[in-house]
Length: 625
Image 1 (cartoon, rainbow, N blue to C red):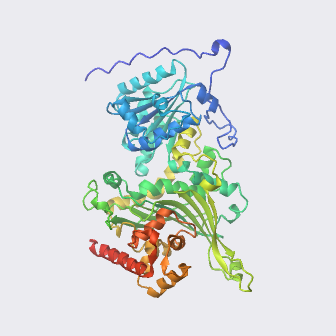
Image 2 (cartoon, helix red, strand yellow; image 1 turned 90 degrees about the horizontal axis):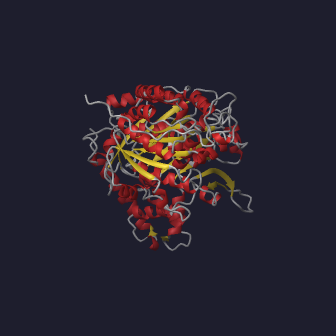
Image 3 (cartoon, rainbow, N blue to C red; image 1 turned 30 degrees about the horizontal axis):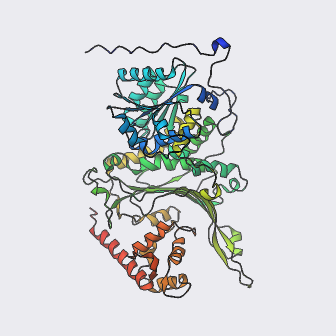
């Protein structure tokens, strides 16, 4: 074999420049307050780096997988924003790491395209801090060169190094071991790794990955990233529960009937079906994003808002959940097919022929503890749906006093994670009037983020995750303790699906799979109908649709205006005003292109029947073999 390459000469490591002036070196402090303001548990070692230290010492951020979509869409824009707002030093060095050399100006033009430039910090100044390092992920020589580049930036002083791994999990181990052996910083500077999901495929692969990373780096250096933990609405769950007085006393099985975690995308796989087919919707969304939201909803209050205290109660919660399986009907699987102008999953050329990979999945978790025993937690995720949305829906039980008021409408607390972040409550109120007959109707108590916090900066989740990792705060990252339990719950089910390859329920693009609503009902969860489901249920009920039309036609001119159709659409969005795009979609789905002219009853009936015929034809064309 050829001799190993000689290490490149490194700049001499000088002593701390302030030593001669009796100025202590910057250091990571112990037992300081966390970024949430909580005191750390006495004796706990938490390597928190304060803002002053971040700006005093040289900082380098290395992005592995820098040529990818995530780096372009999220990572480079997030780092720009953090520099713009003064959270990270504008003098930091950003190194993109990839296997092949790039034309740097062209690379930066492409990968920094999504940056929203501010006059206070030009994009050109930011890109001047960006370089590219070409090298193999598994070769020592490449990491020696990387270390040399970073050391030159640090000018011989101790510096801080933050590595972001946006690479397939199959090479996590190589990158981690190479960084640990060849590219760690000099104390008191920190070396921290941000690892993007997925964290393995099952219990066995996560255990192997965990043992490998633990062999090279301390747990305090590892920041396992689920960016949903950086989203504003998810972050607000703790505040809603524990900073208020009226939520937590009713946060239990006595008052709550069910909890739904829903993720929908109105897109297919976009040519990335081959990658998706290797993981599936459960690994891609449910076992991480939705499960993290579930833990903040269902866990017990931690002793403090520190990483170790939060990880402890998360582990306790997950340990109360039995593993899932196909035989227990714990899961419902679907796969979207072509409908209208939208292609089906199997139409993606990168998807294996005849694949039975689910693009839609729902499962029910049950927590066997005093707080939640008997409450179903429904997780639903799907591609090729009618809209893009992620939300948490908590439905409360009817109470005996509701009967006194003649009310049978259940309260719901809804947390809209994306888009249009909001937290709102579906309640009941008396309609104004002086007659003896008091009319009570469902109403919405609404908090829309962009309205309530109009002057606040709503940053991207990756901005927060970068900042927390730079600060050393792991409270918003995923611990190894909870991942062991999470994989214990899902691994048996995933192995069954991988081995048996059950036939998913085929459904047209934009529609829920047939049987899903009744399946959820069998598990004690009521699903709110979408616009498409309403049409499917009422297309042939002419009198009912005529009655609905007359109620909406306030001026009696026989035409529903855009505003009047908006009132109809509110029925499918919890009584909240829908976006203009959603109302326009209703017009288009009914075959009306000019929404300014409105829609007649005949057009509504014909459009509903046309939608139903196309839907039935799509079902009839499906191969259910």
